[in-house]
Image 1: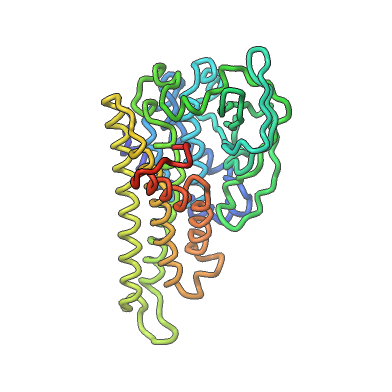
Image 2: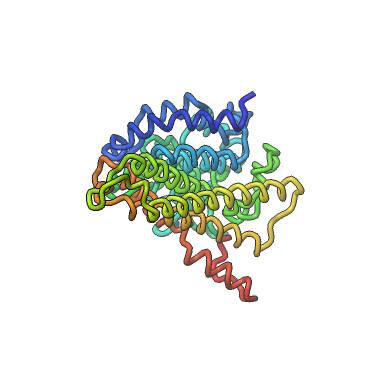
Length: 384
């Protein structure tokens, strides 16, 4: 039986190849087929796929460990992995019929997502919904067979599961960071989505979905936003670790042009390395603690309080903040050579900043909501 440790080890084994392909991934503006094939061969895309559909059936915490490892090699690959694996976990929340359709061809089925409902049109029709709209930032969509998109129905927000035949991709992904994620726009024109492929977001937020009873694993008892956003934060921590490793390699052999002698002898370089390393370690510990706390609570069949949920949202954003601080610290100490495309630190720097701009990882939003509740006020953002 495949273990968690084996999966993390397989991810680590891919890191050298991901580093070698990082420039190609940026140039393609999507994940190379060779990389997707490697992820499939290592069974990493099956981590969160339910066992009844050919997957490994692990809980979402394993996704976070794998994503951190992949991030050491290529930020774009780790980001898309986090999206693909967490989206498969989300599909496991749906009614069985939807899951049977989704995994009918392969346990390695890939899914992109567009969670901003702005511009979506939803109309109830017999047996389902008529859906049209435009969704942005659909990471990994080029390789995806399905997409998850959010729209507002008469009874509230719904998440729709839509096959590749019902959406087109608008190629507008010309960006400074995470170039290889291919986070392009999704366009849907009057697709009929059956009701079993539309799930109320409130049911996901409250962990009362069909998947809870269908699979019985702990992850399906965890509220959506207490878990899924970590699949975006974890890759950024991996990028920071990759930057740290590149910094150590460079500084160990670099000679100062101004002062002479080895740069490694400079106290400032040593201190920046130490500070970045402890920020990354702190971020890793927060991820591990929150994941285990969520699963322990699910084991007791308990729901987290509002305070707890906002603490998780706070921590998800803070993990990304810590990782970006670490990368900034290393980039600033790397000198002019770090500006060249050939230096991996500049790519980690761009990618970490790009990832941290995701709306779900905004420190200003998450910290405000947490602070309000701790001070006895009502949250103004009910998405927790």
